[in-house]
Length: 237
Image 1 (cartoon, helix red, strand yellow):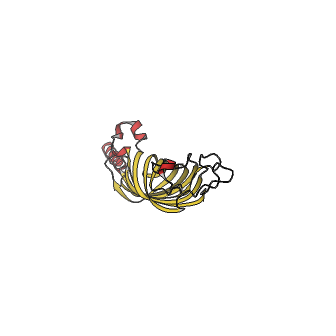
Image 2 (tube, one colour):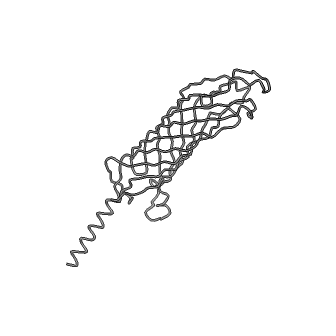
Image 3 (tube, rainbow, N blue to C red):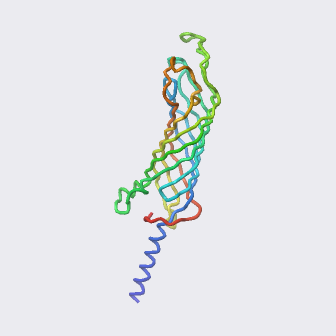
């Protein structure tokens, strides 16, 4: 009887450990936060970003996904900017992103610290941003130095290439069956645009010293839910 009980216990324990090595192949999520612009105006402003994401998991710690963003990017100030310029961009964007987590490249089974930070990741993507300038100063106001100067060149609506760089952390929460099911995500994203549409200004580089790409950073917090079929993974999750 004692031998039978021990055998049953070992089988049960082994089966549970094996179940812990399964993961879901898909996840979707949403979130939001703030952004800051770095463009041709003297000083960037703080705007907002909302996003939705759908990921495919090659492993629990290597993903390829689509991310859609909507938000407002702004910068400059008609009174304090040296050229009296300011803008507001109500943008939308879509990108494909690869993300590699620490858990894929380290043996976290023997380190409690590494296990806790296994969701730390880097990511790289490519996509497009649709710029929609809803408010912009094209001519200097009458009270400014050189009143009436303009127009400041540029377009109000543009579609441009977008390259996001991601640094973030996934905090995993198991469901009642022991599977990684829920994720709290914290992400910092630096977005490079290929063009001059983010702020709506495209003036001569000789006058405005415009030698760097338009960039905006986004700092977000979000939630993800894992779903779909399951796959086996070589490490205990």
